Length: 331
Image (cartoon, rainbow, N blue to C red; front, side, top):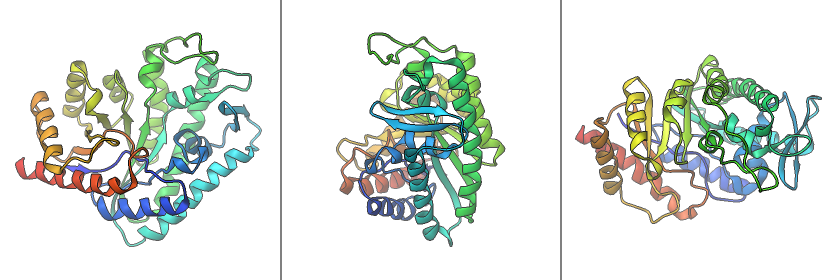
């Protein structure tokens, strides 16, 4: 059966908006609901701060330029503690609603390469610039993700399939030397593909060892899907709007090798499109690559919904569910 899900982020600025997002995904997405992210509540609720708040191996604080590593004292700063506390509140709210539910569930974390481009070293510039710092950060996140999986399983006792979506929108830029330096006048060196695969693989492996299913999401053009799958991703969440011809073969081969594919068919900030149009778009793409609808196929927005109008979000999610059902009817 084809499934419908979301990427993770929702619009809003308050805890009430988060509570409403939880209610919405649990009510509207029976196949694969997820823990929403509402980044409008502040930097601790956005993708970088949320994942840095998870890890305890490295201390971070918040500077005018963004998140910065500060050391390994084991004494997290105020902003890191706030991010961790906010995630705890979100899990509390989720736990209240899922005690009688069973089935699959998904959570999202930021991947090591995207974190390396959005976190600074203690003495300036991005973690990406320092080979040792980026490996330390990735290893700390891998450890934290394993602990997070255990915590989510405790909070969602009826979950029989837990998916951890690792968000890596910056991976393509890291490999292509397109990440700007702090001055803005230069670009960081390209990371070698073997290192990129190894570092991503640490986090994906930690997910798998904790008993969850590692997926990777990226909505950037040029994402190396064969590398991502080779690093251990069991699911690939893609935005159809940014795919090129070379991506099609990589994704088809990964799917034939057992990877789940979630196709981003809905524009998260554009006009809401009816389910028939979403289903036709997915069908045409599947025809091009020679795949058929099935249990390892899903539909989602192309990227997060944080920039969407709040009133449009339930309409988008309902359309995705109906489009997935239509694909099954035509299988």
